[in-house]
Length: 221
Image (tube, rainbow, N blue to C red; front, side, top):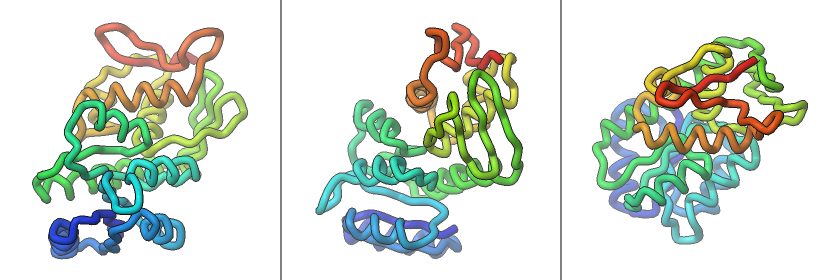
């Protein structure tokens, strides 16, 4: 796995780089948001670790920019900001996961690998999924909604594919979490689902993803 590490703290950056490399990963470590933008634009990475507080800007702005550009790279935010609002803001920006410092390095690596597996699993099974005015190409990762192309984060994409594969059948929260975000908590599912619904919009005045209260979610064809 080729990882872009965006962390301005010298000691922590060195420690994370050493840990990842000791575990067989390739790491490019940068300490500035501008350097991160250049490397992520010019080079191929499998995942990114992004701190929020950077000397020349906010890591969350970097995440937003990548998603606006249609970059589907799995992104794990690493930060000391531990409030619920900060976590929600990070996930709303397009991050796939959020880890609060100090954290266990083994957990961080496990989360990175889980996000990478999710992205590869959809890419390994090329098919066209459709329903409720949506069309998803799992190979190219293109999503069309009423003929307009939209950009989704890897986690949002995984949730949508799971719902479309089993359209007309309710998927429980536990089922969605186990497929799309096995290492995150229930609150993260709420945030990703809210973002996904906002991007998909409504049809005939109703959300394309229907909530079955007390059970889960479904896309009706």
